[in-house]
Amino acid sequence: MANAASNERTIESEIVTDFRDRMSYGSYLQLDKLLAAQVPVSTPVHHDEMLFIIQHQTSELWLKLMRHELLSARALIAADELQVALKRIARVKHIQRQLTEQWSVLATLTPTEYAQFRGYLGNASGFQSYQYRAVEFLLGNKNAGMLKVFESNPEAHELLSSLLAEPSVYDEFLGYLARHGFDVPTSVLERDVTQGYAFHEELVDTFREIYEHPEEHWLAYETCEEFVDLEDNFQLWRFRHVKTVMRIIGTKRGTGGSSGVSFLQKALDLTFFPELFAVRTEIG
Image (tube, rainbow, N blue to C red; front, side):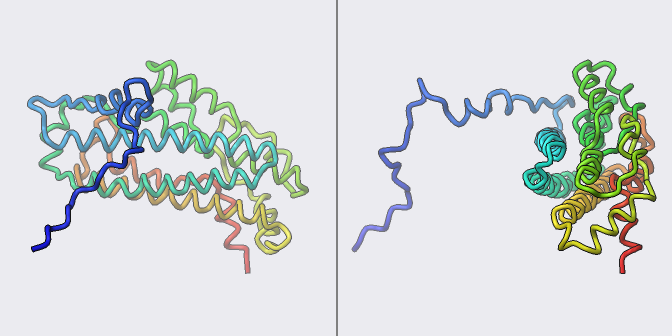
């Protein structure tokens, strides 16, 4: 009778196994630090707190990458390298999808489970994520009042103060359009960039020209649509956030002191690129 085939994969002789003097996967990624950063605070430790911590830590990692890509995209647009900037934005869109899908994991946390360790969080809240705020500032949703939340964190406060005073990605795109012969009013180009971006009606005709003649303005046209994708994805993320919070805590106040769901719902009315949506009414 023939021997049964082995269900074990033989390690190839060329595979490196001695890492005493070599960089390993774990050392490159600093996994000792990364995997030691999940420290529950509940007593006794509740099983589901690990989910809650990892959900938010992974979100912060994705936000760090998103910030990295948006900073690069902004610099590239300012340097008129729009095609390379679009590659960065395409990556940001994939990151956004990851962040949105993550809500489905947190949604497995029931109200009963969360209630057993929520009290240990004190006033810790996602509202205090300076990386999330940095992404919003980069996209044009600026609010100087938010800086007060980060006064106890000098590094975060300095980062957000800098981004508040700098042009957003959209500001740089409008500058690009002006440099390439499109009609962008001086009042828009010289606006106070520390203020959140607001609708400029005079820009709608500029975008109408781009949308009605895409073959002549393809790169600008494609960029407009990429920005619309960014906003759509951001709104989907916000919506999933609202629904997940409602599913887990109902209409309770947030741990950070906000009104909870009603406060989050107000964010659904915010827009980064108002003219790109207003122009749709004028086309056709």
